[in-house]
Length: 433
Image (cartoon, rainbow, N blue to C red; front, top):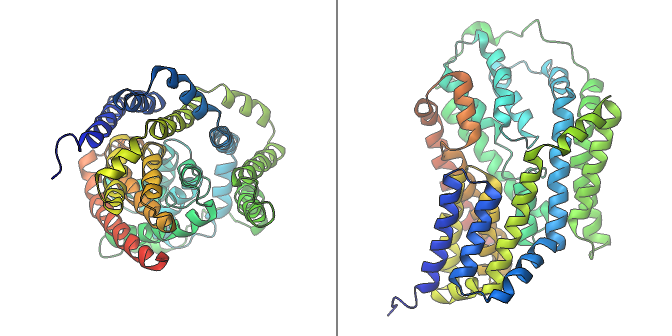
């Protein structure tokens, strides 16, 4: 029979997570919130006083920490240069002439902005979808939901998102594998968005909007290529270099290729845009940039605390390995995602535990299936919560209530969550040794 003493590791770990979630809920800096969770783990599991500083030092100086911090810095710098130089808007102008279908025009700009992992990016695309819909008689809450939903359709697989890079880094799964297996998430997002928000039976558009807008600026493939070149260099270079490293230099971590490709993308944007040096200098002084670095550092300190204290080993012994792992993948990422509304939070707070549980249970061969389950669950939590900054800001822009816009999102989120469970089951069958 399971007694109170045998449940103690679970109680301790739950208490540590509650402390972290409360800190996130009360708007404490995300990095400091994760550090508080790590400190609670060390305290509750009796980490010796002389081990605290070495554990923190190991977490801060690991190659993974340093490389991931560099990647996040470079991604944010690339986003800043493209946005503040106006190149993102020029890319949209170059592409707009190819958009004939009015439903496609409604969602295209949120999807395009979604390619860049800028904080609160839905606010950037809100004026664009608002301008497109100005003659379509679409309700404000529908516009808010469309802008919010389609802004995030990339997040289960797009290789420029720090959360995806972090998931690959923490799990040890190649980022190309994470992206390939995460791609069905985008298909589900697009299908759910169409069925619940965009199809003719749900969204009726006046016949006049079917006609091509004669005011659309003429577009050429050359203009699209020029304005999109930095993104092509960063994304294509990342995939190419990681593939090369995987087959010809297996001792070199994939992060090296991503860093090189992102640096090349920034250089390309800087060459194309005068004044980029000033934009980069201003970005490096921006507080948000360094807050993201603090988040990376906090995540790896938290991971090191879990390993050093033996918390994961004790939890794995409490329940059957597969049971503990499955429950952790379903509920923990969802809860952290719902409370924080941030991908980096649910990945950083839960993946160290999930990966360690998989190793303890001897389920490394099926790790990809469990990582996908955690990504689907955590991402559903992020999309379903009204705490998500993109959701709040989008509703503020369109002057609609959170509850009205959320009604459009609730059923798509439920479909996304259930699809994740089914997908996990299919992956387990496929990956079964």
